[in-house]
Image (cartoon, rainbow, N blue to C red):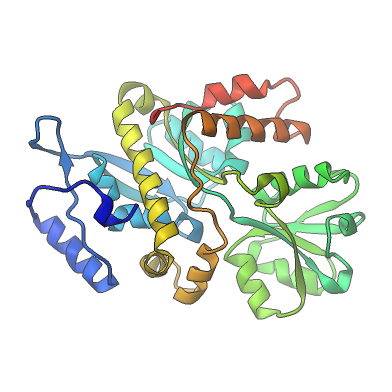
Length: 344
């Protein structure tokens, strides 16, 4: 959905709006006057919320779009963005204890800590993609089958890459615990570990792998992504909110989820403008590279309602099969417990 498709707004311009218009003019995109409209037609103050995200993740461009182009305000919320780089367990604890109201993150990271009982509900989604597995050609790591007996580097041993590609390896009859070795390195040292022969493949996200390949042309072979095979139509990044907010203010939580959906569609329709907006959060990556990276993702895919519930169940079943979730966890009951359908 582009800004011109959004509902019309009353001609009320505040100082906040004028500053936003100046920002948007500088970015070369159409300005939107953010305003929330009450059912009576009178202006209503948007609900203020804190929203945690990782500003280093280019795939979260919809968060920037929603903030800069007024999608949050048009859905009745005013968001303060918190750049959160801690562990997922800490993030979900911050939601459960009301230190933040909502957050966006990778489903591959969220399901295990949610199994532990955090009072957080998955209320929406944004896109698919984000994670890749690349191998060193010189080490013969060019296919999933070729990884038997080899070592895969990851930025941490609970990373989305390790969790997801463990599943993909298992589905290709490769035991992810016995047939391969996982070794942890800081993200910026993964390429050096390959050069030293300490690892033969890397499971991580972009832009890290993208930049690594740019610096080392011809060295790596893409083996798989989290859009490979059965996962080509599966979501990656999801939106969650603290349980109390979902129970007591479902319309507010729904507005937040809806804003991310609308902003995700904008990214899909306008990757050039979206890359420009996100560029200030990613000074190490050129706008044209951000544009290329956005083209690898599926920002048109953001399931809701029963579709999102089905994908959570799908992942829960897969994660249980490789021991990420407990053997006794029922994927159906688990999905129903952690999901809240606010938009159907």
